[in-house]
Image 1 (cartoon, rainbow, N blue to C red):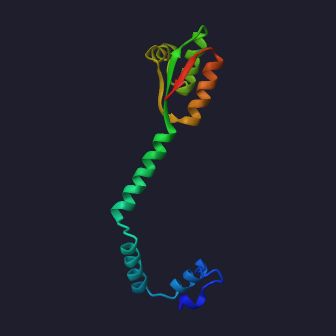
Image 2: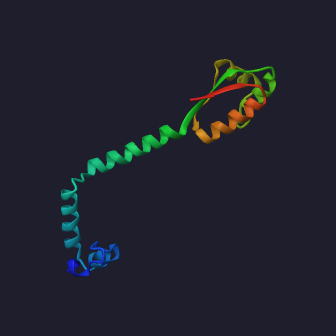
Length: 130
Protein backbone atom coordinates (compact mmCIF):
# COMPACT_ATOMS: atom_id res chain seq x y z
CA UNK A 1 0.00 0.00 0.00
CA UNK A 2 2.74 2.48 0.92
CA UNK A 3 4.69 1.50 -2.17
CA UNK A 4 1.96 3.00 -4.35
CA UNK A 5 1.99 6.26 -2.41
CA UNK A 6 5.62 7.23 -2.91
CA UNK A 7 6.52 10.78 -3.81
CA UNK A 8 8.26 11.67 -7.04
CA UNK A 9 11.67 11.44 -5.34
CA UNK A 10 10.99 7.82 -4.37
CA UNK A 11 10.85 8.77 -0.69
CA UNK A 12 7.82 7.95 1.44
CA UNK A 13 6.18 11.09 2.80
CA UNK A 14 6.00 11.21 6.61
CA UNK A 15 2.39 12.37 6.48
CA UNK A 16 1.48 9.25 4.48
CA UNK A 17 3.14 7.08 7.09
CA UNK A 18 1.24 8.79 9.90
CA UNK A 19 -2.03 8.46 7.99
CA UNK A 20 -1.37 4.77 7.44
CA UNK A 21 -0.47 4.22 11.10
CA UNK A 22 -3.68 5.96 12.09
CA UNK A 23 -5.61 3.15 10.42
CA UNK A 24 -3.95 0.43 12.50
CA UNK A 25 -5.49 -1.06 15.62
CA UNK A 26 -3.70 -1.29 18.96
CA UNK A 27 -2.35 -4.80 18.46
CA UNK A 28 -0.98 -3.94 15.02
CA UNK A 29 0.77 -0.85 16.41
CA UNK A 30 2.18 -2.88 19.29
CA UNK A 31 3.51 -5.51 16.89
CA UNK A 32 4.97 -2.83 14.61
CA UNK A 33 6.66 -1.15 17.57
CA UNK A 34 8.30 -4.42 18.58
CA UNK A 35 9.51 -5.04 15.03
CA UNK A 36 10.99 -1.54 14.81
CA UNK A 37 12.78 -2.00 18.15
CA UNK A 38 14.15 -5.33 16.98
CA UNK A 39 15.18 -4.03 13.54
CA UNK A 40 17.05 -1.01 14.93
CA UNK A 41 18.25 -2.78 18.08
CA UNK A 42 16.45 -0.38 20.39
CA UNK A 43 16.44 -1.57 23.98
CA UNK A 44 14.68 0.19 26.84
CA UNK A 45 17.85 0.01 28.91
CA UNK A 46 19.80 1.76 26.16
CA UNK A 47 17.18 4.48 25.84
CA UNK A 48 17.13 5.12 29.59
CA UNK A 49 20.92 5.03 29.78
CA UNK A 50 21.21 7.53 26.93
CA UNK A 51 18.73 9.86 28.64
CA UNK A 52 20.74 9.72 31.87
CA UNK A 53 24.00 10.32 30.00
CA UNK A 54 22.49 13.32 28.22
CA UNK A 55 21.29 14.77 31.53
CA UNK A 56 24.73 14.28 33.11
CA UNK A 57 26.46 15.93 30.16
CA UNK A 58 24.11 18.91 30.30
CA UNK A 59 24.69 19.28 34.03
CA UNK A 60 28.46 18.97 33.66
CA UNK A 61 28.49 21.64 30.97
CA UNK A 62 26.41 24.12 32.91
CA UNK A 63 27.51 23.72 36.54
CA UNK A 64 30.66 25.44 37.73
CA UNK A 65 32.31 26.81 40.86
CA UNK A 66 33.83 30.23 41.50
CA UNK A 67 37.22 30.62 43.15
CA UNK A 68 38.75 33.79 44.55
CA UNK A 69 42.38 34.03 43.45
CA UNK A 70 43.05 37.51 44.85
CA UNK A 71 40.76 39.73 46.85
CA UNK A 72 42.34 43.01 45.77
CA UNK A 73 42.38 46.26 47.72
CA UNK A 74 38.61 46.70 48.01
CA UNK A 75 38.02 43.90 50.53
CA UNK A 76 34.83 45.25 52.08
CA UNK A 77 33.18 45.50 48.66
CA UNK A 78 34.21 41.91 47.85
CA UNK A 79 32.76 40.75 51.18
CA UNK A 80 29.53 42.56 50.28
CA UNK A 81 29.56 40.86 46.87
CA UNK A 82 29.86 37.49 48.63
CA UNK A 83 26.94 38.46 50.88
CA UNK A 84 24.90 39.37 47.78
CA UNK A 85 25.68 36.00 46.19
CA UNK A 86 24.18 34.43 49.32
CA UNK A 87 21.11 36.69 49.16
CA UNK A 88 22.31 38.65 52.19
CA UNK A 89 21.78 35.64 54.47
CA UNK A 90 25.31 35.73 55.85
CA UNK A 91 27.25 38.27 57.87
CA UNK A 92 30.33 40.20 56.77
CA UNK A 93 32.39 37.92 59.03
CA UNK A 94 31.01 34.83 57.30
CA UNK A 95 31.66 36.46 53.92
CA UNK A 96 35.27 37.08 54.98
CA UNK A 97 35.63 33.44 56.01
CA UNK A 98 34.31 32.36 52.61
CA UNK A 99 36.80 34.69 50.91
CA UNK A 100 39.61 33.27 53.04
CA UNK A 101 38.68 29.74 51.92
CA UNK A 102 38.90 30.88 48.27
CA UNK A 103 35.81 28.94 47.18
CA UNK A 104 33.11 31.55 46.70
CA UNK A 105 30.29 29.33 45.51
CA UNK A 106 29.90 25.81 44.11
CA UNK A 107 27.55 24.24 41.59
CA UNK A 108 26.01 27.25 39.88
CA UNK A 109 25.20 27.85 36.25
CA UNK A 110 28.02 29.04 34.04
CA UNK A 111 25.93 32.03 32.99
CA UNK A 112 25.38 33.16 36.59
CA UNK A 113 29.05 32.53 37.40
CA UNK A 114 30.14 34.81 34.55
CA UNK A 115 27.94 37.62 35.91
CA UNK A 116 29.35 37.21 39.41
CA UNK A 117 32.91 37.10 38.07
CA UNK A 118 32.40 40.30 36.09
CA UNK A 119 30.94 42.11 39.10
CA UNK A 120 33.69 41.00 41.48
CA UNK A 121 36.46 41.77 39.00
CA UNK A 122 35.03 45.27 38.62
CA UNK A 123 35.62 45.60 42.37
CA UNK A 124 39.25 44.50 42.07
CA UNK A 125 39.13 40.75 42.74
CA UNK A 126 40.73 38.09 40.57
CA UNK A 127 38.29 35.26 39.96
CA UNK A 128 38.57 31.80 38.39
CA UNK A 129 35.62 29.74 37.16
CA UNK A 130 35.92 25.95 36.94
